[in-house]
Length: 421
Image (cartoon, rainbow, N blue to C red; front, side):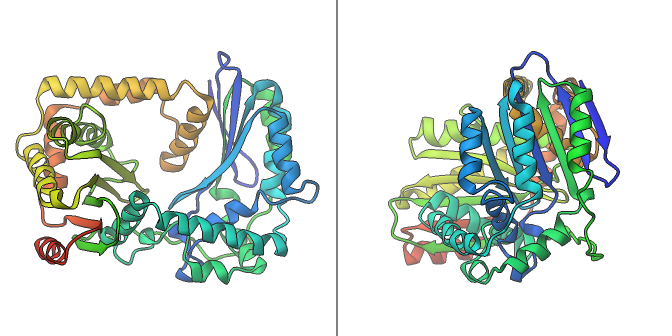
């Protein structure tokens, strides 16, 4: 059973009671991520996420870790380009302790200066780790190519220069201006008593003060770009990304886009996986994925391949994309794709954590709840013509972004850059 409550200070509480589960997951979502930072603040959202686990007025970082372990639960956080999320998952009987712990670190983090200096080194190591992971790195570079100078193009982790300059006052000011009650959603899914939970949450968060900042948050949609970036690096493989403009997270055509992505490269039965890996053995890792934001989106194909196969694989990718744009898909392929989408959806929503994520995203994107039955209906309603039209809209045009990383020859760099410029 779904319920929504707006506290007096504007914090939204969205809950889904699922009596058949033995777990409950609580997530505190802040509608602020890396796209909301100024260039001088690059990495602040992610750094704040780290710092909230470094101690409160009554708990040290060690106390926090030991307490969640003693409950047999899981507590973590993550930062995206548009949100920052803190969550805890426990057995239903441990919900009161979990709420007390999660709210303490969210509301009463000390942000100690010594901890800030230590955490700078941790985050810098995290940045270096991305540099050593070519799959992550090429996708980060690709975002810069397709987003240009838009705030969405900046790395979530920030830059070494901005991380080194962070001060306690910087973080306090960032929290004050971005962690406003009206931008916070608390999502809870699992087995709990609704009446008792709402009383507890109102008592816990009612004192959360409104921001002293009067500067409104500004977001504007990016103008997605084409072009190429080729970066030579001594690796065993060349890592490629080919990207196109897609639709925003709440767009009316999103289910047709989901189906298109599944057909192209979103599963092991997809066209790219079957053609490039299974039929020809040219790549171990080949897939496509969607990135949906509040006002825009992208669809990206990734492949890790031998340097001598770069042109061949790119030609195969383009061939499959052109086939979808010119001919669409048939009824049998669409039915198989719909069945896969529905099965994957229903299996994913068997956990309280997945349900919590869906609750929060529904609220942040649309301000309302979409039931599982509603989603199934939307998937069933996708037609061959919709997928065909979507493929034409996304894949016909000259705004194709290509990013390559690895042991590329100078000839390959020049040739591919000229082809996609």
